[in-house]
Image (cartoon, rainbow, N blue to C red; front, top):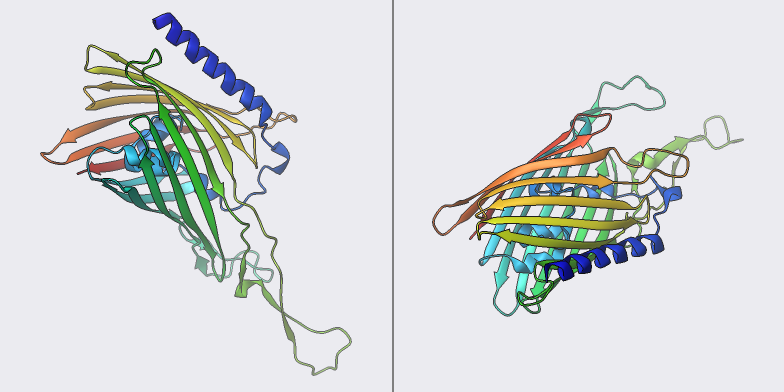
Length: 350
C-alpha cells in the first residue's frame, strides 16, 4: 500500500511537470504588468512554506493562496491580522475575517494595504526635489465566498477591488480569483494526498488618470498674449498579473501527535517565468509548528535572475484559550540584494 501511494504521488508530480511544459511562462512581458500588489503574500504560515500550500491551506488564511480553502475552517468564524516588513522599508499590513454558516457556506472580507513611507517629490523644474513629500496609497479589498461541496471537495472565489493612488493620479481595477481543492478519502490508497487548482487575478485592464497628468502649454504660432492651454496626457492601460496555480500536498501522521506535510505547486504567470515552490511542515499535536520552503524560478534565456526570493522558514504556536483558538506565526524570506522580509501574523478561531 505504501509503495502504491509513493508511486501514485510520483506520477502526479510527473503530470504537473508535463503541465508546466505546456503552460510556459512569458519572460518577454516581465515587468509590464500593473497592480502587482495582488501578488504580495500575506500571513506567516503560507510564506514560511514558500507559498506551496495551495492544496492544504484552510480557513481565513486561504483567502490569498486559494479561496477554496476558506470553507474548510474549524468553527463558525476566523480572523487574521498580519504585518510584513517588506523590501526597501515597505510595510505590508493585512486583515481578514471569515464567517462559516451551515448550508450557505463561508463569507470573508479582506483588506491589504501597503505603506511606502514619505517619498521626496521631484519634477522637471526641480529634479533634486521640491521640498515636499508624498506617499502612494495602494490597497486591495476582497470579498470571498467558499463552499465545501463534500467532505473532500471545496470551491471558492474572490472578487477584489484594486486601488492605487500616487499624489493626484490614481487607478482602480477589479480582479477575480477562483480555486478548487480535492482530498482523497481516509480509506483510499491515496489517503493524505490533496490536489488544488487556482486561477488568480483575472480582470480588465487598469489605467491611471488624474490632475498630475495635466500640463499647461503655449499653443505654437499664437498671439503674444494668448493664454496657455491645459492638456492631459493619456496613460497606457495595463493588465493584472494573472496566474494559474497547480498544487499537491501529502500528510504523513506518526503516533497520532506528529504530522509531516509536504507540498509543492507549479505557478504559471502571464507576465513572468514559471515558478516551482516546495514546502514542508512539522506539527506536534497541532500546537507547535516548524516550517520551511523554497521557491525556484528558472533563469531566462539571457541568463537574467528571475526572482530575488528563495529560501523561507518559520514557526508557529496554537493556543487554546477556552472556546477560542489563537495561532501566532512567524516567517522569514531570504532576499537577494535586500534584507530578508519578516512576517508576523495572529489568527483567531471562534
